[in-house]
Length: 389
Ligand SMILES: Cc1cc2nc3c(=O)[nH]c(=O)nc-3n(C[C@H](O)[C@H](O)[C@H](O)COP(=O)(O)OP(=O)(O)OC[C@H]3O[C@@H](n4cnc5c(N)ncnc54)[C@H](O)[C@@H]3O)c2cc1C
Image (cartoon, rainbow, N blue to C red; front, side, top):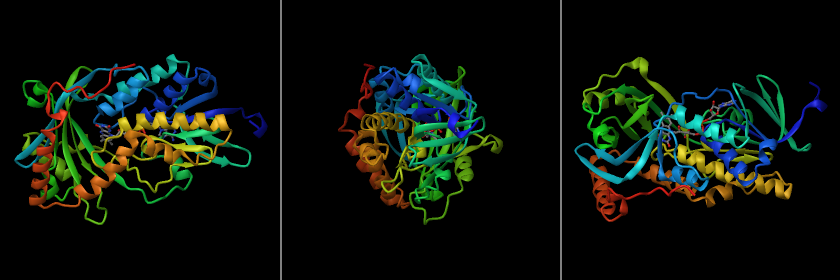
């Protein structure tokens, strides 16, 4: 194809995870004409597996509720989130505190909703390169099938973002490490399933100098009850030695009378959001994990859904003004309540994971328990999520 025969489209979204599909849904709900103006490409074909605990808090449910959706895929409602440190714990309660989905099903559902609204998706098409031609006002995105020319591009291509790498964005932003395994359980063998409890266990902060936690998330995959067990290492203090995540996972599972089979371990990073990060360049926005998520708990699904709302608003404003510099994107991001909360979490992570002294951690647990008792999160009937509009 010659240069002059490449068709120019208004928007190309790279990646159909929650950040990409949320952007598309926000645009399509605002103006159905976007169905003809944009394309989503993804190297994977849905339903695709995505390594993830699948926990979606009310922050994510609220973004979906504002779009008119409730979570319509099978999910496990968590009634209690237990934050544990050795023999101490405190709990968030709610109906539910959050929901655990199977990411392959959840992401596929969002993709199908985009398609129902006329959105066009090309699955099994991977981006391999891109060039921004600012003077001509477009981006050429090279995939393994063709070149797509777009006035604007949203890079929602995850933590290992190829777009970030190709653009040479190396702003020193931090990356958290995560590993997980799934173990088959029954409601009889596991009180977490029976009582609807998700556990965040911080005990390994002292024993293994972990800057994070071990988790137990009860989940349902294809009708089977599986415990999603994993380790989150924020690396909030990069100057300290790295904890051995396999050892942390193995030891934590042994405490629960479970054997770790190494071959089942899967790992993936999460990029943190950083105020100094590059989040846009002319004609291109980063969204979701490609931009950055939460280093305190590693929450990313709700964050990705929130990025979709902001990115859609930014693209709409750009076309209204015919100005694609995207200079106000960062400002728009931090005006969004969910994304602003991530900045607060960055600050908290840097402080919370600074210590590994038992006395300080126990003091923190005591204060948290005291405060929580005085909030709605102490009530089992508390419903934090809004109903769909
Ligand atoms: C082990 C683990 C557990 C986690 N648990 C939780 C949890 O319980 N709760 C929570 O909120 N968050 C959790 N997260 C984080 C969460 O998974 C991410 O924050 C979330 O998936 C980000 O969504 P996204 O749309 O930005 O990216 P992704 O979901 O990663 O989607 C990116 C998409 O881009 C596509 N893509 C990538 N490269 C290309 C390319 N070159 N060309 C075309 N397409 C491309 C991919 O195929 C993919 O579909 C966890 C993460 C890990 C690693």
